Amino acid sequence: MEPNTHQFGLQDGLALATSYLDDPSDVVCPQCGPDKIEVLAYLDSEAFGRKELRPAPPEDRYTVILWCHGCRRMAALDLSRAGAR
Image (cartoon, rainbow, N blue to C red):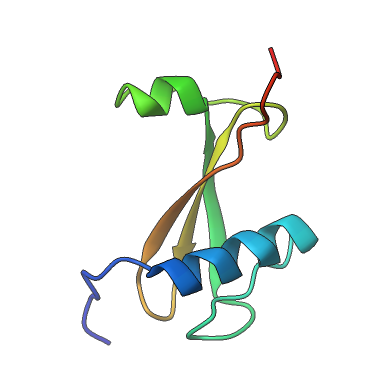
């Protein structure tokens, strides 16, 4: 399959976020189905907003980077929690 340079649209992004929040170990690609998404990294959300890549644990303020091996698209889901320090 040729690389897809398109981003996930709003509807697909919301589906990814919902799937991740339901079960982070089993994220379903809205286009390709199950068993295609890989979690590549957990990054510090504040640093990522400054275009810095700083690893972070998947708790409190973080961004998760997802890769679909089917459609070859990547998503960054900002899962910051308001008020978390």
